[in-house]
Image 1 (cartoon, rainbow, N blue to C red):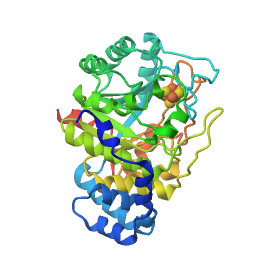
Image 2 (cartoon, protein in one colour):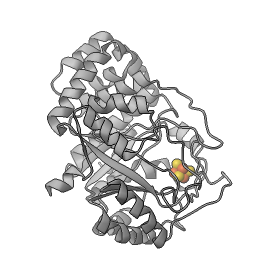
Image 3 (cartoon, rainbow, N blue to C red):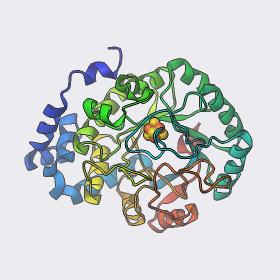
Length: 370
Ligand code: SF4
């Protein structure tokens, strides 16, 4: 077995989709009563047949999350370093063909942004860039990590997929977590949404978590962009990917995100709509399938939704986010990747979490224990 691609190749998208939509109430009940849930159970839990069982799923998800994580929600914030990108992605404001001014933060600008984020109280930062190997490359990341590391307890990164050697070079600089979303596991539609640039290589992206595991990364994050394709099928493949990685790279930890397509300048309309109840169903299905995985929710979602999801299975939340480079201090008006839905400050979100009897945690719990 060389990589996840070997497993992925044995699956057929249409067959998986058909089997999900064929699940019945009896399959859902079997999944709910199981002690160890399988991928077939996961299919049942994300299927339309599970809709009437949402309350039961939510209760179970809450219990399992409490048992594993306690009453804590980890706080993190994105720091966009650059909006330069040499890829065309149909759904993103940073796409190469979007003719807008580009910006990559200089070392001094990075530190101005860091100062504002630190003032908000954050100890966990997610560094984000577009995918441009000329301006934002391994040496740029090393420099950025050197600058940022002393100020944060946990550093995550969401940048272009890289080679194994690159990840091996970056981990000694204090890189803890890498997020790499497949966007969609539908190979043909992936091509349509990524017509140009390195990102059009589906297999290279699909195998990135393998390279991260081989590099011994502390934690990696997976997910798809919900709205590009049938979300139930895409999320099944995410669960399959997670299952494989956990078994093979058992020393790493894992997180899942479920971003829904958001408006941006000149943007794509979702092909497939997912309503709020369905997103709750998905979050609970992930938790019932995997008790260990961290589940993360961003400011893409509305205040109302975020308030109500806190107790139902998620473990980390961002707040006060800017999705443009320099957005906190240097250049608040630069191009943002997508529109934020929840504009509340980190302090307000922390208050909402506390009001529900949970504790907002600013320092990553993994690091607290090491
Ligand atoms: S999704 Fe990423 S790779 Fe695609 S255009 Fe946006 S920043 Fe670039």
